[in-house]
Image (cartoon, helix red, strand yellow):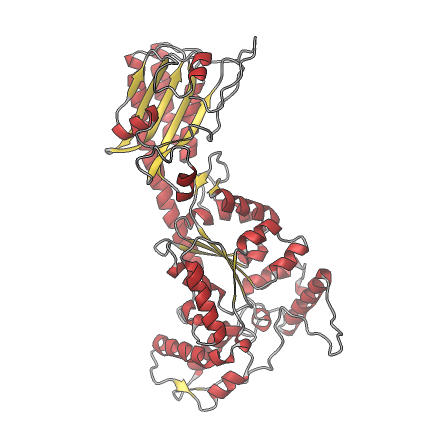
Length: 547
């Protein structure tokens, strides 16, 4: 049964501190185990406790727990039991394994290997799960047809196999199995059944608690990113029929129904969140959650907990997005250590909560967005090249409004229609000069600037006509430094670009007298979100006196 049988070494004996208990001691240990299980807060803690408690006994060679779970298509296709499996929708996954070899003291805790997965009806473990009935073999021999590792049975001196289904309210949750070096009587089977029954209840309760925690966390995340009711739905940012917009919509259509990671690029306010939402709406996970994460708004020391969660404490973004889409806005703000962790999740489709040993399978559609040049960050050593190529599997660029002026008026009309409904002012309409002024302005803040400008005009209108305030001269995009007229093809180094950005932010703070938020704040002047600005102020070490 052992996945990697240990090679015997003469004279090597393990130090097994616990012997075989008497019946009275056994019952006392059983009661103590049940009480301790009641204190556990997670599946990982429960499994570890049960497996380690049994494996501490000298007569027990190996204790294992398998859970019945829905299968991942990618795992199913690569499974060694694929052609023997009768049901590709679910199978048994090894969740806990503890034991020690009597030959060389090797401790068996690995959760991968030949017997890490069983399909229903396959092998003794699969038969127990399929039938829902216990199995007790008190004279195990290497030549029995159900034995998958005869050499291991022989070398470790296995005499008894005890297999118990984990059943809760008529539903099989998994299998609990013990391999013993001594013959076990009916009382041992009764004690195992008692523990298995309590273990099944603990598993069901822990799973229900985790699902409740997941839904709660998902709600918290969604609430954190709810927009003010005055703002139009993000989908309106995709209004328009310019060639750029038609190309954008076609790219969304092409990739939405796949699980390929998407990298959305575009200037601040161009509608990256709208594209992510539309990708989710058209995807095969549209029925699942859409979890939006602003990477620039996460405190530097809390990335790990926010993304991966922590045992018994909180659920992370990855788990909250399971079965749906995880949208990482400002992905360029991810610290390098977390980039490595995210890459592993993309490769293995598995994550591990803080404080836990076991990994958790996950199925998440990943969409990332940035307003910066990620490849330049790769060249500067600020972003992992391997993660960049993973995220950039299908790039989507959103053209700024100045590149598609024909979309400005349709977009403005869509925003106006929303404002009419929201403000309950159906009479609102554009003043005569407004359409021309809208199209003459470059909108450096893109769709976000346009919608906020129109809302402000709608709120202040007293005559049913929407009048625009004086629009500022259209500056060059905040992310691009203005070049001298005789630049002769000048090229800035990364360090020079960083210095320019720092100076630009300091100038914006000075002009706005240190104010960050609001229409007259530095974030609006720069055309970026306040959270992103706060992150960059910290990054460049700017202080209030710099304003």
